Amino acid sequence: MAADAVHELRQQCLSRGAAGIKGLGRTFRIMDDDGSKSLDFQEFQKGLENYGVSVGKEKAQQIFAMMDKDRSGSLNFEEFLEKLRVRRTNTVSPAAEMCLLQADCDVSVLQPPMSSGRTQAIAQAFQKLDKTGDGVVTVEDLQGVYNSRHHPKHQSGEWTEQQVFRSFLDSFDSPYEKDGKVTLEEFVNYYSGVSASVDSDEYFISMMKSAWKL
Image (cartoon, rainbow, N blue to C red; front, side):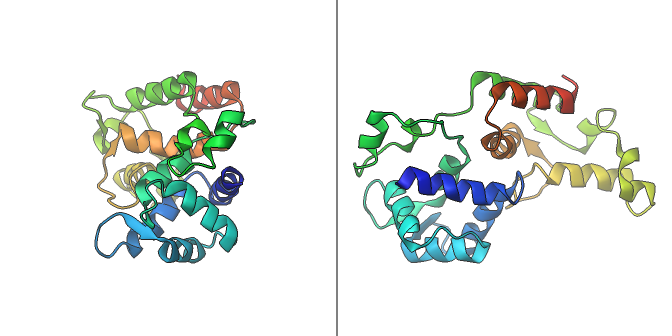
């Protein structure tokens, strides 16, 4: 089924780490020569192969058909990546099974968004980093919040404190435009990838509280 194919693709991306889905997005964006943010099936399949994830042609076709809701022969890869980030439930309802057979299937019925507890923990972590409260985390915000002295490259003298801060921000920043600034959307996108690989809400929230001392 298409939902299983999507789940398989997600797991392959997440096996590359929390930014695995962002990496697939980077591959698609490089292929998007005209800036339309859309790919046909051949481009979609080639993008998967170039990134090194393989679900086979049949499953790739199932995923593509599922996402190409208007049957235009193309899909918006930004919307596809957003669906790919969303955590799948353990069971699929009969209504969802029927949805898969329809051209205008709303994939969100198969993959509900993160729980309110998870999104709240992510928002709290972002608020702690965003000392100025302007909705953007910068190097200046990290001073006094993130300790650079334990970073191995800072200890070796290879990097300055500013370089450590910038590297830290880059891990959350958009892979397409690393400007040293991290918005709430980019922060949430990063943790959406982490969330997709954690089944338990309790564990995810505990992990966030421990990591950010919430």
